Length: 188
Image 1: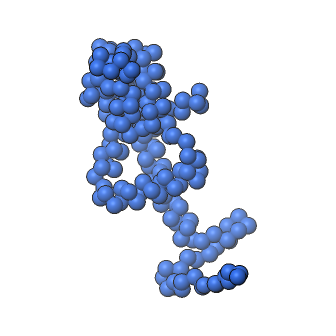
Image 2 (image 1 turned 45 degrees about the horizontal axis):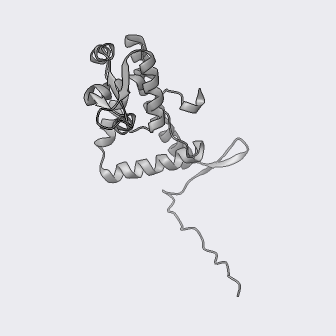
Image 3 (image 1 turned 90 degrees about the vertical axis):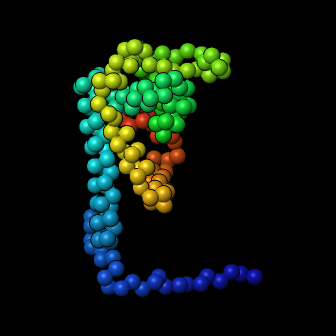
C-alpha cells in the first residue's frame, strides 16, 4: 500500500495581506518579510544598545562590566548566595555566573567560602570593597530589562520567549548564553 501525496493549495490571502515580492540581490524576497525583519532587528539593536551603553557606563564609573555590576547588585540584595542562587537571580546559566564571580573575586569585590550549612556548597559574599562599589554604582540595564519582561502579559512573555529561543537556536545552536557582554567560559 503506497501513500498518496495530497496536494493542497496555500490559503488564498486577501490583496491587503498578500506579501509582495521584489527582486533583491539575485533572489526574490517578500516585502512583508523584509519589513518584519527590520522591526525585529531594530528592537534587538535597541536592547543591545541599552545594554552596551550601560556596560560602558559601569566600566567608566566603577571599573567593572555591566554583567559584573549586575551580579554585584544581586549579591548585595541576597547578602550570601551560592553560584546557583546567583544564576537564578540573574536568570543566567550557572557556568556564566561562575565565570563572572571568578572575575569579581580576582578584583577583590567578592569572597568565596565553604558554606557553614552545607559543606559541599560555596557561599559568595561581597567584600567591604564590593559593598561600597555596589552602593555607588549605577543600576544595571539588565534590571530594567527584567522589569520590562516581568510587566508583560504572561502569554506574551511565553510567546516572545519561545520565538526568541527558536531564533537563537537557529543562529547560535543550543549552547548556554553568556551574561551580556561577557565572554562565555569556554571562549577565553
